[in-house]
Amino acid sequence: VIPPPVIHIESCSEDSISFSLKMTTNIKVSGYVVNIYWTFDTHRQEKRTLIIEGEKSVQKVANLTAHTPYEISASAKTELGDSPLSFVHVVTGGTRPPSPSLKARAINQTAVECSWIGPRNVVYGIFYATSFLELYRSPHNTTTTSHNITVIVQRDEQYLFLV
Image (cartoon, one colour):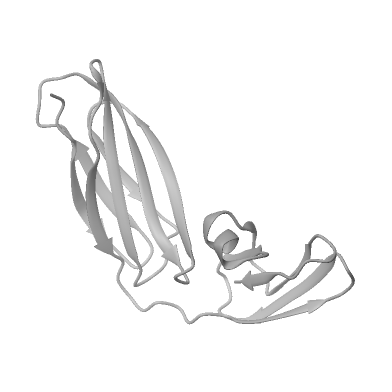
């Protein structure tokens, strides 16, 4: 039986997490698949996937949000197949930035102007969908560093927006 890899948190700051991966077996490891999960505004779970080559690995994941819970899962790719998943939970330090104050205004039947107030020098994600279920599972989305964006939508639909 292939054991799951051991995930060890090396360090954690306001905007990054460093972790190491290792196996407690002599089975040859060719790499790891790592997923980092977090929840956006309680409606949308985000995920970042890393494909890591090699047996031992120390990784740093940057561009994270302060004071946010993250779940890291990892499985090892071995000569005998993939290992089971292992999990670790960690919360970044610092103070979580306040949620932006969003205003959405229809320009015409297919364009919506979104503008918000929030911190400078950050990346904003704009998520939109026609239902809460779609907003959670598979919203349309885009990113920007500005404080406004025009989004193209389908005519004759009502949309929910999150920034």
